[in-house]
Length: 482
Image (cartoon, rainbow, N blue to C red; front, side, top):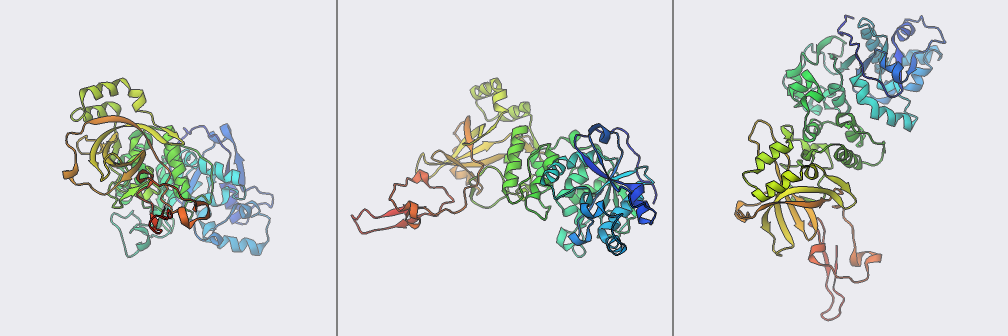
């Protein structure tokens, strides 16, 4: 195979153990020349890893029985001829073999492949690998992106719904959750088709990649840190991507946000909630609240999204600096409020996760009172983010207050209901981040709730189902449950 990689000698210091395939040893094994004691997998640690140049494979997993796993790779040189022949016939083996064939002329003697370089029997090793994976791809000297379902010698420039109907019209690789970070992290990424013919490099195909992924060309040309995208923008890149395990939709984004957290497979959508809370603890970017701008559902009890797809329309939302946010508010905020804000820059730029909600100060303007004056209120909240290429007006979301509780409200409120004279004021609020919309039955339908209790209007959330049980007049047995 021809050389496609200009080997970069400046790699960041590695911080974790990494298991790599010895390229020469593997090719010798394939040719039947390896000794039985040949070591195909070698561990590298810390500074030693930092000095080791390696290639890395990015691909879509096939069926488990078609991949080569760690336990099989570890004993590949010692198993019998029949078992060895079966493994060599797998599509996963051919991916490893062709990656080795490509790495050698690129001057790289080590290769990492996720199917066989991680011992997934160890939950600790798997968790460390997932938290390290972005750095592993970023520190690689070459990344080979294998598009197994296309024989084209160029990347597509328009969707093909006949050939790739299941994947939004593009090769499957562009629809997977894990391949997002594998596309962005490496400095040198090269695409190959199903016959392992070279297609192009990431920089050379920046325009085509931008069309396919909705990611700015600047990311492919200059890198993530140079472009400094907002939280909402990064989330939007993952909106249409899929993963086999629901939790991986969150875990595959860890490196893109530079956060770390333990893996808890089985937690479902809670993984994405934990990811957002970790992001909030690390960065001050209010675009994390800008999801669902085109959503039609009436309200949500959580101010954090439960799925990346809710950020689909956020690819052009950028974070605003404190100074640009103040400048945008000058035309609508009273001088007194502006002066207070300017004096409290640090407080404004901080929001904290508490057990009562996300504590944050936001500019709010009353829009409308509900039927029970003072109980139901709708306010417009201005976030320190705006759309690219348009005027600098901040993104606004609608908040519904019921008593002391806050909800995201999505249905458009008529301008006729807007209180134009209402001032914009900075308020400290606690925004809930747990979605309490799941149905819980209380009151007469549950054993613990059979005792009568008084339910006030402000106790009832928009998502509650209210059950009224009417007893005879004067009996005192009428009950409200929710």
